[in-house]
Image 1 (cartoon, one colour):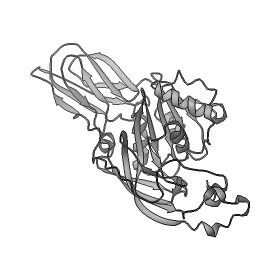
Image 2 (cartoon, one colour; image 1 turned 180 degrees about the vertical axis):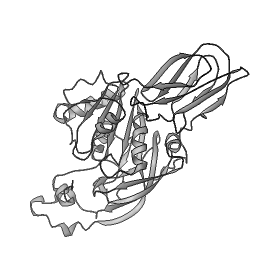
Image 3 (cartoon, helix red, strand yellow; image 1 turned 120 degrees about the vertical axis):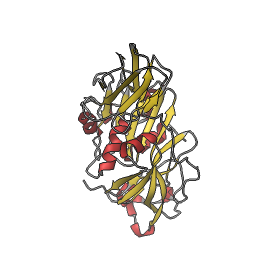
Image 4 (cartoon, helix red, strand yellow; image 1 turned 90 degrees about the vertical axis):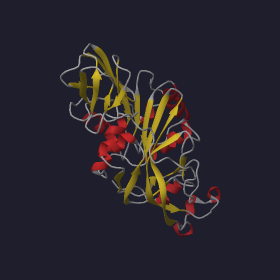
Length: 343
């Protein structure tokens, strides 16, 4: 699908919130955030080993970085890139095992011995999505074994979100009115998990001002290219087995993050090309007689966040500049699956 030209976008008055058009991020981010416990741990001097694997409801996709605890030993593990974990040196007795990742969890009674095969129940969480024009995160969810409910964009302001654990906003769903934005803000503050991609940035900026800065005067400034991104999240590193990921942007005008303030984690970042617009009084432009030459944007390359996450109230918000249409690389597909389990 071809996106509208940038002049049409400008005429439609699409504006970004926060940030600056050309300066690189000023906040320094650690090379690795949220470092996880090892996947195999020695818990004590017991004679038992309790191990297993955690997968998605489809019975196949491993859930990586899930934190595992066991009642019979004071130690913690986290699943590896294949979803496996192991507790060694535990007592030979019945114990309660719990694994948790984001809004997803599973608990069972187990005795050391044969490895366990554990699966997140598809009905253990309620998920909803708002359809869009350039994205289809619902396809990713269904591929993982979930069946999310659809909330049409024009009904979001009246929708009842209280019963849901996760809400997904697709790119191209449009801009929402104040009632819908307030509904999303309340949903997250009360413990809901929100994921949004690309052009859905406007809802993130309006509902949670100051939590992430997008470039100005127009966030939709990204240019098509393949980016080798730095991976700052331990879960993603375990998924890929390395600290870089290849992300492809095959469409123009994707939303560019300028920077993330303190309290917002950058999961991925990389060198991208964006358009920098001249210093113009945009409010005084006669959109009925636009001469595109007067804008004359210049392409500039700089390192920008590509995926961020932050806590808000009792809930959490995750955003990616990339999404899950045909542009995806194998790396992006793997990251999107695990990102869902990190909500």
